[in-house]
Length: 68
Image 1 (cartoon, rainbow, N blue to C red):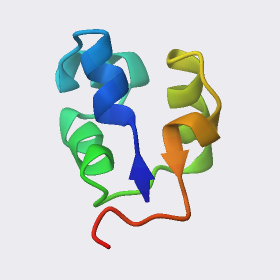
Image 2 (image 1 turned 45 degrees about the vertical axis):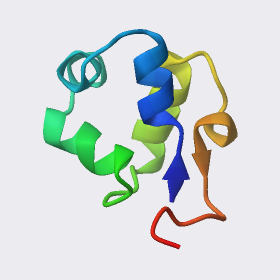
Image 3 (image 1 turned 90 degrees about the vertical axis):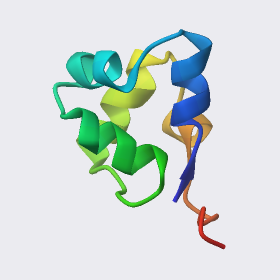
């Protein structure tokens, strides 16, 4: 699933590690989400959206695969 996580993180000048700490996940999880290798479960997706003061739809696009 395509997402804007890397862009949103960069806009705040956050490292993957800083974002991971705020989400209580590993840096590897953040990397996997950003690269489209892992789609977060709904609770984590909501947590990400809330952190960036966005909706899930503003962060994630379920209709587009990053590998397409």
